[in-house]
Length: 454
Ligand SMILES: *Cc1c(COP(=O)(O)O)cnc(C)c1O
Image: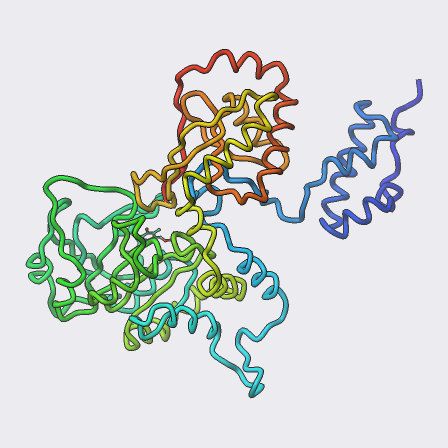
């Protein structure tokens, strides 16, 4: 028998194949070369025919230069932390694309001189929140809080209720963050009850600021009391409100979520929030407030370390100034329309999969509005689809509930339904007979983890 080594196509010959030259242009030559070496090894080991070399290299290359894989979010969780929180609107995506090259981010085209960085974005935010003198944008909500506490209270005290020393998610604990700034935490009140008098007794010459944190990811019911922003504003010290979600104005759907305008009107000196929660924009931290306090933050050296890039500025402006964001549309999706869409999708899939339409409670997610159920519908498939759909193209992430894989269409555009159907069909053909078996079972097992924590 011939030594298989002799049959292994040469590296330079493979790399000069036009299909691999094209792939190297998209993905980088190092990646393509690594795939070539791996395929040569398969041939050497007798596991692949030499004439399959190029096809096999192509099959082993990723779709894109970034390993981040887009997915269809069929979980019904609008701000799914594990799936990138808010989905950008088409105008925001366009803005990111336009901002990706050279641009006038710090340059005045009229005078040819340097200009204030991100002025268009800040202007858009200030227009939308007239209650604020001015705004500032940093890397994320945690950075906004870090900057506020550092600038106002480093070496001094932050007065905060014991009921608000929270963990936001993924091990991010507020007290630990505050301590990194060199500020001392002055705890007041108890876990369930804190009064204005508690704050008043703690405020003194050492106070840098009073901090009011919205408990965004949990609820305490029963014998509770707290001091609101309006009450705390009567204390003669800077008042910072971390509202978390980034609602600029109240939303009737979310009566328990504080909003920027309301918090400023009640007397907060600074309001901080995230850009990629209910605001529906890119990851960012927004700070609104009085000219004097925001200026103190802007001038602090830390502000430079927390500043955002041009892509964020572009996406943020387009998100707030443009049409309703996907986040807003998905939250307010009409259950009647959701049901019609599910019926349509289920009808095309029924023969292959036994799809049914079932009620499905959507969630805000992202650590916001815990316990709030958004009424909706889903296409129910046998449980085995959950796994298979994570390996189809496009990738579809559903939700496991009562031993079924639910595909909730809330966070999908209608134009994406065809791709979803396609993915389900791919999965169905891979699962083959397995579906027939699972169809019969339908045990009452619940495996539900919407990953909704912020
Ligand atoms: C989410 C949240 C944060 C953290 O914001 P990130 O943008 O995730 O850094 C801080 N405070 C509150 C109240 C939050 O809900």
